[in-house]
Amino acid sequence: MNGQGGGVLPDLRFSGTLANNEWLNIVRGGSLKAYGTVGFSNELSPEDAEAIRAYVIFRGIQSQAESSNPKKP
Image (cartoon, rainbow, N blue to C red; front, side):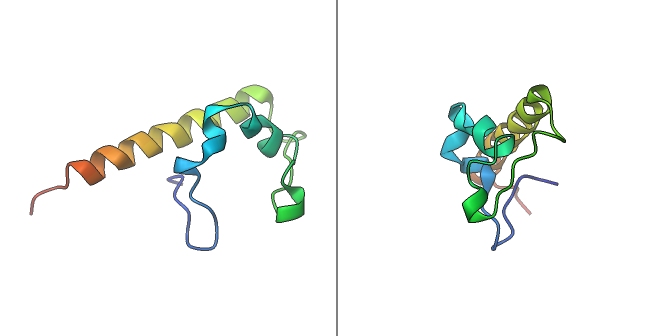
């Protein structure tokens, strides 16, 4: 898992919800259920959801660094 969208799924690494509490409303509360994103409040604690958010933010930062410093062959 790298946090990267696969074409059909959104790329969460650059989601605007990472910077606010809407993330928890989506991930745990299911506020985007009408768009196919169910809530995971029974499966994920608030701490779990925050850990996932931290990982996605980390991958976004890592991806930006990789794209600005491409590896030389």
